Amino acid sequence: MNLADWLNATARAKPDAPAIFEGTRLYATYAQFAARAKELAAGLQAAHGLKAGDRVAIFMKNDPTYIELFYAIWWFGGVVVPINNKLHPREAAWIVENSGAALLVSDDGKVGTNAELPQGCVEIATGSPQWRALSSHGKGGDTPAQVASDDVAWLFYTSGTTGRPKGVMLTHWNMRVATLAYALDVDQPGEEQATLYAAPFSHGAGIYNFVFVRVGGRHVFPASRGFDPNEIEALSRHFGATVMFAAPTMVKRMIEAAKRSGYRGEGIRTIIYGGGPMYAADIDEALALFGPRFVQIYGQGETPMTITSLRRELVADAAHPAWRERRASVGQAMACVELRIATDGDEKPAGEPGEILVRGATVMKGYWRNEKATAEAIRDGWLHTGDIGRVDEDGFLTLTDRAKDLIISGGTNIYPREVEEVLARHPGVLEVSVIGAPSAEWGEDVVAFVVGRPDGDCDAAALEAWCRAEMASFKKPKRYILCAELPKNSYGKVLKTELRRKLVDG
Ligand code: AMP
Image (cartoon, rainbow, N blue to C red):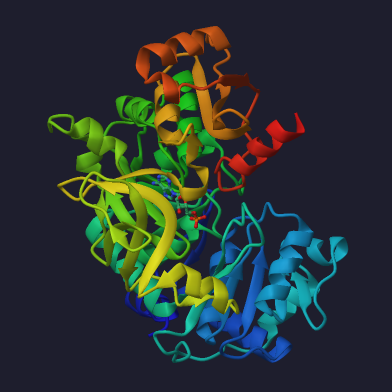
């Protein structure tokens, strides 16, 4: 089964249903969407000699062309290689080379002019004469190419916060199962819904396109091609029933904007958050302002968007005796995976932290051309996520940290997330990130980087007093570094490696 079969089926069942929007402007119906995918597929094959299994890299901001291109590539059995648009052209060129893509599609041809592309790889800019010429090769195959379920559909490059990114091989089957799990564990999809691509299409937002193609929902690409809370408000009011994936930092920005504007989430059906820690203080505030519109997911590229979910009724349920713990958790294992907590093969009982292992049909086929990394990540059929967490008696998983972020001070494990949760509750704190700094005496010292609210009161003395009243003294930060912002990657994840470097560099 080819992922493009779903587009074909929807286009035949509901040809006139609106499919793609650019802002509020209708860009394509489902019939036009499928016709465009076929036509582009024909052009890519005829003009560039592409065939099943070939990789096509995409380095673009969110745009209707992005989704058309995805389905064109799958239509002939190719593999999409979406590249995070915020990467440096040189980093993008590295991914192009690693993936062995013969073609790179970009907004403006910017990779080749700023970096060296691998030999034999052609870059075309959307809107260029070569791009337009792709439409002149006829209609293309009437139905998508047949592929095997374990053929690779998407090479998902990890964010590579340490070392080079790795290409996660996601198959047509992986994506299909992840999509089925959405309807069971995340939200009930419907054709009246509009999915807003406010987060990068190369990542989680793009992975959520399938369910909406399947049900014939609307795909809305904000005209700004980026993330703007005011635009999201306007689009949500316009379309109603909007659904979007948002990193916690995006949710936080939406909430800050809503506090100023008085917006209370009208038109938004669901905000699916995940990809990084959502602190209890932040989700409490989001719920107070927007109501029960939130679902949390925990996943990673290696098992896309599918490890656990915390459904809307559980996020919002304040009547349950364990609601605080549950809201701070990432929920229960999704229907498509099994979960285990173990460290070095030693399975942990309920309540004890260990590495999170996952097994199931959404787990990647492996890393592209990297058997060594694959063998390290998947052992005895279990994906080793590198995340630490604990599961309670009811199966709710609470994430503590990435294994590499754990702080060991005086021989005791300190989970930065715990310290961050406490500091995030301080009224003067906007954002916080906690790391371990090398210490001759203790091995590591706890150091907190804090961004204060413009109108708040948060100097080091106030934070120290707050922590003293709230946590065991061995966990308390030894230093508070106030800064204007935290370094983040383009998916909104705080780059702790950068913070560590800052400390070393002074
Ligand atoms: P990526 O592969 O870029 O999507 O990054 C996945 C990583 O993000 C996971 O291994 C976790 O460390 C982190 N992550 C994902 N979802 C959550 C979540 N809901 N809460 C906290 N961290 C998360």
